[in-house]
Each structure stands twice: as C-alpha cells, then as structure tokens.
Image 1 (tube, rainbow, N blue to C red):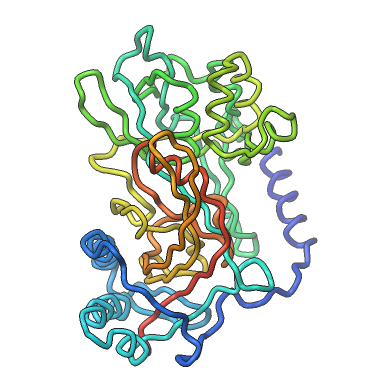
Image 2 (image 1 turned 30 degrees about the vertical axis):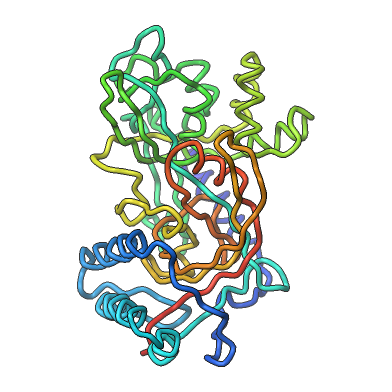
Length: 384
C-alpha cells in the first residue's frame, strides 16, 4: 500500500506542475562572434584529459549516440571530432582551423549576461585502516544489502523519469536511514558493510561531499575510494545552515572545517542537518569521474550531461583563486582554457553550472573551496 501511495504522490506532483517556458540551454555562435580562444598552458596534462575522453568513446557501442539539442552525434563522429581538434591545435593558424571544422555553442547560463557559475572540487586525502582501532574508528560504508532503488519508468511508461532509493523492511520499501541514523545511531554498525575506517570525522564528511578520495594506510599504501550510491535523501548544505545560525560567515569548506575542529561538540548537530549519505567502493585508481577515467586538474570539469555530451570539448573563461601554502586567499587570476566534460554532480544542473576539478592535496582543496565565480561556458562540436 505504501508503494502505491508513493507512486501516486509522485505522479500527482509530476502531472500537476506546468513548467515555465525556458530559453534554450545552448546558442549557436557565428564564427565572426567567437571569443578569443587560448591554448592550454599544460599541453601534456591536456593531452591526458583528451585521451581519457577518447578512451571513454572507444568503450561505447558503435551505435551509441549523444545529442546537442535535437542534433544526434554518433560515437564515430565524437571520436573524429577529438582527433580533428588535436590536428587543429598543432597548426600555426589553429583558430582558423577550428572555425573551419567546428561549430561553437554558448551556454545561455543562469542570468541575462549568459554567465555560468563556476565552483570547484578536489580529491581529499584521509588516513585510515582496514581494521578499526582507537585511532581509526569512523567507518566508510559500502552499499548495504537492504538498499534498493526503484525506477518508476519500469512500472509504467507514463510515469516520470524518477529513481527512488530506499530499503526493504518486511514487505515494504521505506526511505533509507538518514546521516544522523547511520553516523550517530549506528544503524549499519557491525553488519559487515565497512570497507575502511578513518581517523577524522570532518574529513570523512567532506569525502562524502567530493564523492571520491584517497585513503593512506599506516604502511603508506594508497587506497582509492569512489562513489557507489547514495541513501536517496536530499542534500542540504551544512554551510548554509551554519551561516543561518551565525556560526560562520562565508560558508566555504575551509571555514566549516576550522569551526568544527574548534567546536567538536557541534559536529553531531551540524552533520545531522544534511540527511544525505554516500556509500563507497574501492577502486584501483583515482580520482575517477563519471566516464570512469582519472580526472585531470583544470582540464576535467563537471557539467549537466543532459545538455553537454559526455567527454565533449568545452571552452571556459572565468577567474580562479590564488592561494598560499597556508590555504589563504591571495586574490584571483583570469583563467581561460579548453577542457573536457568528464564528470557530473548532484548540484550541477542546467547550462549555468560548472565544477572545475582542481586536483589533490591542501592547495587544490583551498582553490576548490574558494572557487565561486561567474564566467562563460562554450561547447565545441565538429561540423556535420
């Protein structure tokens, strides 16, 4: 009965909401109006990112297609586009070559200036063990056996494209445990779902936000953990909650960490504000993006895959933070480069959001935490 009520409620909401007419997410840019394009500064790293997109395309079925608006592109066309792009970049008149062989689209963004909001992410480093000890006592969980997901479309083609996540209790499917129930009521403890234990609950929380990370074992071995699933609960920003309570001013990750380390008694209250929870799996390399390829700092970005094809060539122009060894913000510098659409994110929706991968370690963390700037986003597709 409860499943029927859930399905009825979702369908009611879906049919009862009439969306506003929105502008198209992408606009074609005539060659005479192209922005000033700049070559990547680190061609070796850029080539690695390009090869990762190629590797992804080569794993796809030959009849697989991706869309830009109503235009379909086959895998073969996407591969051909990347190879032609490589050829053009090596030519003295490389910009003319691109204009001759590619179409450029600008993201209409999130405001009347056609700007996108650029944020950042990084690979956190944690210290942990395969066995719990007095030091390593905070678990990283794999997907629990009772966790299930329901694709509504499998119950009827007239239902919305919506996937619900929950757990089985008797003959019912109910919402999965919240973060508070998992971390502080220990609902999963001792069931064998722990894959690692780490020594810092604050860093563990940020691992959940980033979606993947590196865990260094006592013997120095590096273990890569990667997003496997979520509990299906909505994500709530603890930064916003802490700001509204007057605990912090800015709300970036560094300020949140400083506060929680100074006020460990607040950890339970603050973390419980976000009911979302992430389950992980161990991988042999990392950090992996949505293409199952290792992310490359500055040249791997996350956008909305419903608008921008996976692995596609992007051109971005914005500002990125300058930081010192103490993770202090010194200023901002212009940043324009080609990059590749190699990841996605729960909050990266629409044509007005971009997440830049900054790398691993304290400097990358600082850049990612400060990154909050508007800019322009373009998509480059080989001409048909």
